[in-house]
Structures are given as structure tokens and as C-alpha cells.
Length: 568
Image 1 (cartoon, rainbow, N blue to C red):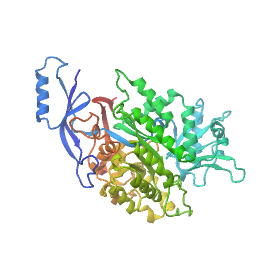
Image 2: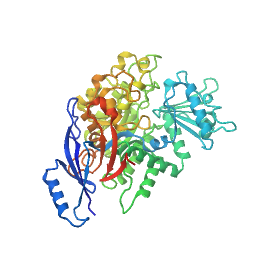
Image 3: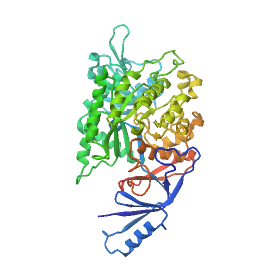
Image 4: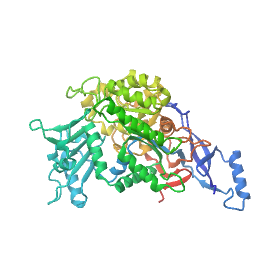
């Protein structure tokens, strides 16, 4: 039965630019006042007096059958109707799992961490493992070992305690955790470190970069049952609906998450239709191997999956490319910099050299896959741009993830090459960057998060959250990107390079249309136009950048159906 719904008396956001283009800092938002959908498709966007709408209403009023052309009218009461947001960079299963982990984000010190875990352990005596998230290195400036987590459990228990850093690049565990992981038997891996005692050589309980990805991530997937993994993804989908998302790009898909996602698809299907109400594009994670053959073998797995799961066969659950983590993060002093870190004179060894990246990029590109390269430090950004410009076809829409500290020259190269700038303004929140001047020096902090340069040089923008490494809601992301102020601590007055800010309309488009373009889905989703999918969110908001932080998501619609409401 065809269902037609008319939305009126609202501000229907109109895309301020063509797909692949940026609106610019000063472009104001523009709106229609009415939108009409039939089933899962937008029929028309404009005003209530437009012919397609008046015709539909006329047929509705003359029809005697509820199955024959009846139009339901919804009064938006002046609220804004935006394209469904699409998270340009997130981790779906880990996001869902994080919702049940102990959050250490509010902690300021090691003693805070210990007290928080001790209280949680006492309140949750039956959980088999104590899993935590949100640790940041500034909380523990003198470093940590397993001993710092020992003795925190209730009397008579010694459960494994495993703590993720906020960015997911490192993990820290207690002595029971080392045993449960089997970490004493682990061998060092390229691009990662297993921290060991300088005298005895024994594992101390901290695992960084590729060691974390290679060993700890699979462990977490292994100890979780299929039911728990499926439930985690379902929880992530529901959490995403509540903040206005209708799509997401998973930027580190692996076998465990993929199997759970397919199981949820099977369970959610009815009448031959995919039942997960979130459009998912996945980039397969390529981990550092021992040689080129091992690296390319992982690309072949992505190619195999993309042949089965693509825009023709499963348009709402696709494998679209590969992702390579090419450096670490600035807070842990593992991002690749062209100059040493200010406080210790250290320069990080690359996780991937250009020579190691080239065969991966070449094979993925020749197979028609997109390439996404994680690059945070300026030296790594230069390296990945060298490789992408030389070996990735522009029509595949290659992309660089994060781009936190770029040179002026590379910002220009990024734009001229048309490489997508996949950015997460939530990582630019001033409240979490207090350590940067000490780590980088004030002179380099002036190059942080140069979004305005990327956009003005022509790089397509795609906004994401990197959840669960950061809060996932899209409107706080827009607020930080446009004001360069803190959403986490609204009273914190520091701004981060406000001359690199985005415009509000520009940022909203980059968080919807821009993400759709980045994964080659701009002809179906990401903007409100005739023929597009009826994915949108209804928001109570003002369009001044300072007021975006007060915006409230009221409803989320996917495929023409309401999937979340604040009233419920």
C-alpha cells in the first residue's frame, strides 16, 4: 500500500552546493517550506502551492479509500527538517560495545581512574571482565603498568580489567588481564609496541597501535558472544537514530564485526528486504603485515567481499574500500611529525612507509575499491598524499582520515587533487587539546585542524565523529567545526584556530551530502531532492553557529518511516 506524507510549516534544508563541492564560509542556509514523500522516496521539495503537492492533496480529498492516494499531513511547527546525517567515520560494533563500558572520560588523574574502577567493580560483582573506555594519556603523565590496576576488584575476586584509550590506539590491563589475553606469548608486530619491563623483558600491560589492533581488538571480539556482538550493533543503530543519523561509514571493518553485522541483517530481514534501518558503507581494515604479500592478501579479502556486497546487490550494507592506519595520535606522541615532539625530542617511526603503502593502494585501486588512509601528523599526511596522488585514481574518490596537523602546502595539494578531507571536528574540541602546546610547541598548534584551507582549496569535506573515540552526535560536531569552541566544556573560553572554521550550512551539508559523496552514494542519499531516499531528521534549532549547541533532535525518519522520536 502506497503511503504519502506531506511535511509543511517548517524549514526544509536545501543543499547549498553540488555534491563534491563545498558551500563556503559565508553561504547562508536556504530552505523550502514543504516536502512530500511516497513510501521511501521524496516526491517533491518546495512550497505547499507547488503543483505536485496540490495534485496529491486534491487526489487525497477526492479519494474514498485509505489505500488510494490519501495524504497524511504533518505540521513541523517551524522546526527544521534536515537530510539524515551520515557519520563519515565511525566504528559500528565497537561503538555499540562502548555503550556498556565504564566511562573514564571524566577522570583527571590515575587516582581518579582507580577510584572509578573500584566503585564500578563493587557495584558489578558478576560481570566476568571489567571493560573501560575513555583513558587519555594526560591523565597518567608518568605512564602506567598493570600494577596500577591490580587490587581494584572486590575482595576475593581478581577479574581482568581492560582499559581503552579514548582514541582506541592503546589498551592497558591489569595482571589478570595479561593472563586472560595471553599477552606473555605475544610477539612484537610491525607498527606496534608491546610495552615491556626494561630489566626483565616481561609484558607490563600496555599495548599500542598495531599491537592493540592485532591482538587486543580480536580478543575483545572473541570473548564477546555472537549475541553480544549483534546486540552491540543494534544498540549502536538505536543510539545513532536518537541523534539524527540515518547512515554511517564503518572505518575499520574486520571479520568479527562483519559476521555480527550479517547476522543482524539476517535477523532483521523480512519479505526479502534488508531490515537494519541504517545505511552502512564499510572500509576493510588492512593491518601491518610482515611483508607486501601479507598486506595485499588483506586487500584481496576486501575485494572478495565487495564483489558480493556492493551498490547493486546490497546497497545499504556495502564494502566500498580499504582503510590503513598510517600513524598514531598526537596525545600519545605516535603521530608522524616532520619535526621532533617539543617536550622530548622524539620522532615517531612510521607505521607504514610509502613503499609499504604503494602495493596496497595500487591493488585496491585497480580493483575499483576506494582507499582511506589515516594520517594525523604532518609528515604522515605528506606521505599518504604522495602515495594517493601517484597511485589512486581520482574517480575512485580516495580520502585521508583526520588531517589534524597539516602543512599549508599539503592542504593545497589535498584540495587540488580532489582528495576527500574526512574530518572530525569533535577531535578539535579545545577542552581535550590542553596538552598540545607542550607536545607540539605553540608554533605548530597554529596549523591544527585547517578545515577552512582544505575546503577553500577544493577538497570535498566529509564530517564524521570517529565514535566511540569521541561523542557521536552530529550537531555538536557542527558546533565545534563552526565556532572552534568547546562543546564538552561550554564555559571554556579557548578557541582553536577560529580562522579555519566552517560555515553552518557548509558543515551541515558536509555531514550529510558530503559523506554520501565520499562513499559514492550521492545519487540516493544525503540531500532532500526529488527521487532521493526519504531519510531525514526533524530538529528544533536556530541557525546561528553559537546556538547550534542547543539544538534538539525531535524525530529521525529512515526510508519514509519514523524510527525515533523524542516523545518516546
